[in-house]
Length: 563
Image 1 (cartoon, rainbow, N blue to C red):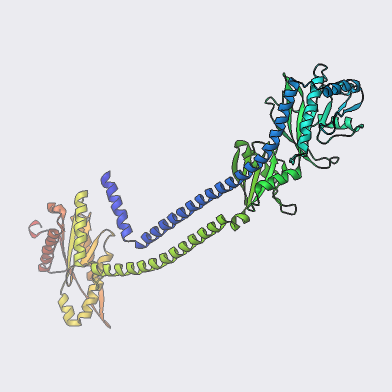
Image 2: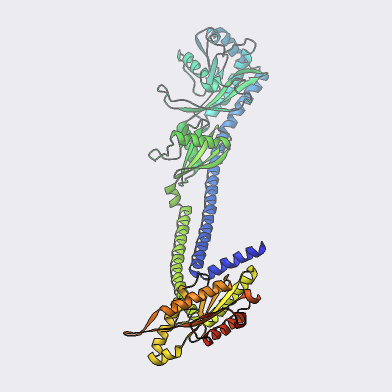
């Protein structure tokens, strides 16, 4: 098995050695493949660096936006903590007790308002007991209502302080299930109190803060739907107020869309590479970093679905959509996500685009130089191969008869004899000499002799198999090697050659022809199992001269004593 593999490898290498053009092509393809792989590796590394850079930029923007929102959320948590303390330990101020007494007188009116001190706290606006009793969501507990009103007035003082600062929120409100509310944007004492309270307690940020829908009692964000009767859309952060497992109401903080745009613009901090977009948890666009007259990147339904699917799997990452690369980062203090949209044009105009273009140009230049080098080398190798083949042919062949010369014939014959011995098959040799060849040179000249030799070589070659080898080993002497042929088969070939030569007339001069004959001797390994080519050729040569002695123009394939 190993011997067969070794021979196959040797045969393959030998074929390559005789086909230098294929070696050049193979080397060119290998170099081109490796250069392309290395270039592609650099492109992949560059792309990873680009994605990492995009993610880092987005992370910085998201962190900055989170810090700004965290301040407002911390205030909302502070208000809830203060109200919890006030519910647990109400202050014994007379003004608060008077407010509770006043409420008991007003509670049956369709709408009412408790305005304790306009300079210190916010007014409480409310509806009647009958209005509260119409829905199961609302509840006015007689034992808790006094403490809740006192706590609301205390928180109203804190809310008034909040409105005096430069907060980002538009309004902060406390909406109670007991039929009242207070807000940094107070209502006038008229029938609008009823409609406003009804509008507040039917908002999703209020109705979805019960214990079943918000077990963690954490901050929930809601974006108001589009509405014709509202001047501007708002985003609300809401927080439920619980005490002793009782749901009192909801603290809410409203942000306008221009405010969210301002927060995002401040977080972007004059970055111009790509557009930043803020979305809520349902992937509704809230605002973008593009100016009002700028071109905002839009997504169709399929692209939005792809982005939503990608966002569900991780808090940060990226996705490629055609010619745009989208990276995202979830916010910690907002129920939403920040997207960074980077288009192909922006990527090309940026630093990474310039590097990618330079890398592509270098690869194209290298490939062009490699192609030119391949053409030049291929031409040189082709010329050298042709020259080598010509020299090799001249070294192995007789220039006159175009048969193998003596050296090439002996080399090939020894190799064939070795193979026949290994395969245990016969190996035969024919030795041929033209009769009276010297007289042709003397009568017609050496040019005529050369024509006779060429003509004879052609006749010999036409009578042989593809596996046989013929060569000129002397002036008018030829030798034929027949691997696999028995002594009788070789004698038949020799007779066929002799007859073919003898019946042909050769044109040696203009209008002058002549006939020639040949004497042949045959030997084979069948006779004495001697596979040495030189000894077989010597035996055939002896039989050749025996044919000449017996009258020429004949084949001798056995010794005289064996006839």
